[in-house]
Image (cartoon, rainbow, N blue to C red; front, side):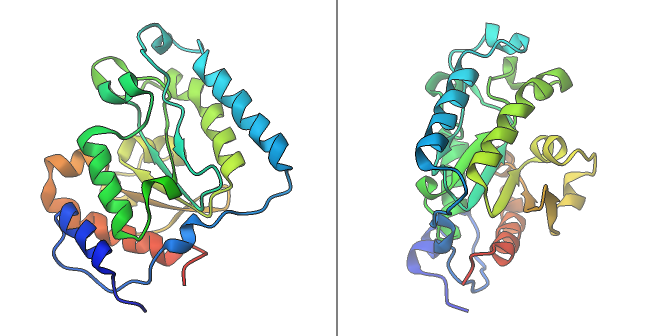
Length: 226
């Protein structure tokens, strides 16, 4: 296995992780994949889906939103990152994982040899719940079809899930997060790795080393690894 690059070590320093295991780079995660859908038709599907989300009124959250938060990144990425729901800054800017949690997520990706632009980032919910409360079951159900269509369009090789709520709603389990970590899961044949949400890691920096272990697991499961 190749040693971590100086840049990856720098990102690990930013994560607050000071002990590493050598791991081959994950640059292959940025490779695009060929599928059976013509690029023009696929682009049209993305545009249609984005318009549907932007005008969605399926649940009451639309009444209080500033912007829907559709997703961002490489629509042909090998890596899909799924979080819980937009926060105040995400609602204001219409982009997932901005602010301090977004900076930490960028560092986590960088530690794996990935740039934010190389992956695709989305949330379980496309609108912000009031006061950042947990999503309700009807709200998750209203958004579930949008996320599934995103996954179908991206066709990721691996899904990285951030936090308990995202993991429970994607995988339809109630297993405590501590027991979901450290082992592979699967969603419709796609490998899934569950780790802590960056916002939690900001509050509990001692858990960052465990998060790095989860990222190493993701690297080992990624089909395009070297």
